[in-house]
Amino acid sequence: MKFYLQMGHGMQAMCKDLSAAWGEATVILSPQNIHPTNKLKPFADSMRKVGGSVLFDPQLYAPRIYQKNLQTHDYWPQSDFTSIEMGDCSDLLIKLANINSTIGSEAFILPSSIINKIDERWGKVQRAIADQARAAASGQRTLLTIALGKDVLSEDTQVESIIQSAENWDVDGVYIVCEHPERYYLVDKPLWVANLLSLVAGIKRQGKEVVVGYANHQMLPLALAKCDAIAAGNFLNVRWFQPEHFKTTESDDPSRRTTWFYCPQALSEFKVTYLDVAHRAGILGRLATPTQMANEYSSVLFGGAMPSSTNYKEGDSFKHYLHCLRIQCEMASKPTYTETLNSQFAQLETAAQILTGLHDERIKGQDRDFGEICDVNEAAIQIFDKEYGFPMAQEW
View 1 (tube, rainbow, N blue to C red):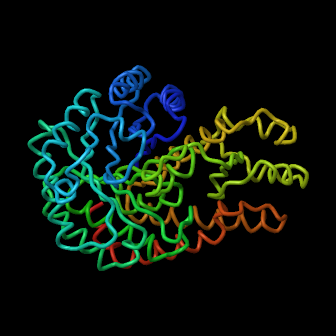
View 2: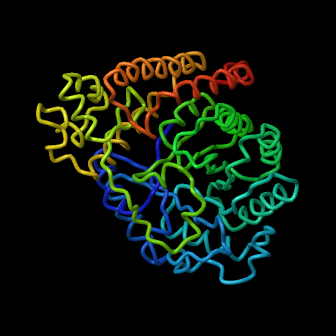
C-alpha cells in the first residue's frame, strides 16, 4: 500500500523536503492552500525537481458554500449549482481537465459533493460525472470522488449500494474521503471501520484503483482490502475528513499548537511533556522510533537530554509522523492475504502490550492514544476477514 501526502496548511515546503529525502512523493494538491490557479503549475514543477508527482483534488465538496480561497480559482462555479449537483458539469470538467494537463497530474480526480444518504439519484449523478469526464480527460486515468458524510459507513446496506453503483462508473478508480462519526480523530466504532474495509475491497474487486484521502494510521488495515494508497498530512484536518473545513472563511491555522510525538510501535501520539515523564521514569527507550523508521526529525528526543529541552519543533513532529506512516504503509502489504492479516493482528497486539506498560506509568496519549482503538481495529479486521477473507485470499 502506497502513501501519499495530503496537502494542508503550511505544507508546500514540507512536501518538497520530504520528497527530496525519500526520493519520491505523491502529493494531493489542495486548491484551498495553493491559490489562485496560476500558482498550481509552479508548485507541481518544483515537486518534480525533487522526484515528486502530483494529483489535484478540486475540493468541490460543497460548491454552494462560500470559501474565500477556493473562490479564487478559475474553475470554481459562480452559479448554476443545481446543474452541477445533478451531474451536468461538462464545462466544469473541461476546466479541471485543463488544470490537470497543465500541472501534469498522475490522474484526474473528478469532483463530487458530500453525500449523507446513498440513493439511486446519487448513483446516477456519479455515473453522469464519470461519463462526461471520459471525454474531457483526453486519455488520462480518472478517479471519481466518493465523499461520504459521517453516518454513511455506519450502515452496511449503504456500503453495498455504493459498491453496486460503482460497477456502472466508467472510471479507472475512486478517491474516497469520509467524515468520521461523532467527530473523533480515532474512530471508536468497529462496524464503521469494517464497512470502510468492505467498501475498499468491493471496489478493488471490480478492478478499480482505490485511494483513501484524509487518512491516518488507524487506516493501516486497509492494506487487507488491497487499497492502493492512503493519504495524510500535517494537522488533523488533513488526517480526518472534516466538511466544515471547506465551508468556512476562518483561518486554516489551527488554534491549538501542541507538539506531539508519534510512537509507531504503539500506534499512538504523545505530547512531548509525557516523553519527559518517560525520561524521568527511565523508560523513554520504550518510545524510541524503531530502527527501520529512525529519522533525523525525532532523533534529538532520544539523545539523553530531557525531551522538552531539545530543539524538537512542530515541523519535526509532522515530518516524523509522515515519515513513519509512509514506512508503515509500505510494510503493511505482504505477499499473501494471510500474512497481511497476521501482520495486522501482530501490530495491534504489540501496540496494546506497549501501551499497557506505558499506562501503568501514567504515560498516555489522551485523544491520540490507541489503547481502546486496538480493540476497535481488531474487531473490524475480524468482521472483514469473515466476510471477505476467502475471496481476498483467492484473488490476492
